[in-house]
Image (tube, rainbow, N blue to C red; front, top):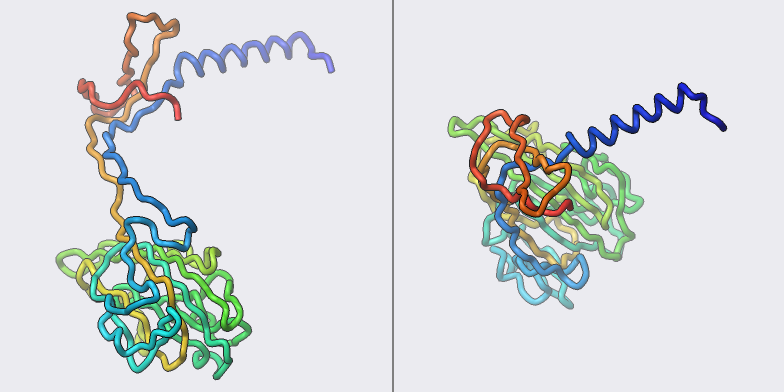
Amino acid sequence: MRFQPITALRLSCFAAAFFTYTFAVAQEWKSGVEWNEPPVVTPGNENHQPPSDAIILFDGSSLEQWEGGKLWKIEDGVAIPQKAKIVSRQHFGDVQLHVEWSAPTEINGTGQGRGNSGIYLMGKYEVQVLDSYDNATYFDGQAGAIYKQTPPMVNAMRKPGEWNSYDILFTAPRFKTNGDVETPGFVTLMHNGVVVLNHFELFGPTSYTEAPHYVPHAEKGPLELQFHGDPVRFRNIWVRELTPPTGVRVRAPFNIQKPKKPAAQEEPVVDDTATEQPDTSDAGDQTDEKK
Ligand code: MG
């Protein structure tokens, strides 16, 4: 296809405008924040294995990290609920939590009476554990549900006797000094690597009898594993406390205006025209390569 002369002219003008904008205007943007270096964490050889900064809550040998742990049975490196719930001695706020569990190989009961346990975040917010493989029950009570608040988006359950993994990301709720909710809690859950809850906003603590509603509580709380009378099996439980990246704002966001024809003796010119509060500080790494 041949361009008409007028079309070619328009294209030329467009290209010229584009290159002028790209090389003369659109310069690298910087946030003006000096970030601290993120700590180095050595991951496990496989993703289900604990990273170097994980707190091991059950490695198959002992439940000494749990109050009531002696009540449960440990068999072949697997913990089996008996008599009562167990409660982590250490308390946590925002966490990444890994738990592996298996519904009993022998199927007994139906609905909520089949392979029922649960993971209570801060001792209050239950991520349901249930044998949900071909087992009808109310949907906000099946495996991967926040009990009586939301079903999982999909049912990623493995067969009874096979191992399931839960990878939970939990953001604890925050409360104002007057007891009002500042920010609610959130849960993201991967069941066998499948996202089943995506940043779900908790309505409040889990209750069987009451509508969930927040009651102010401490910044940290224990993890609990529920005893519901069923021989669910647990293994490989570890948790990481989550700390946001830290940094210091040293100036308002800015663009770096580089000279059109860089000369060895010339330094990059900082364009502060896009900033709200110009700052003459030289802080901020202006020479980073484009990432
Ligand atoms: Mg339960």
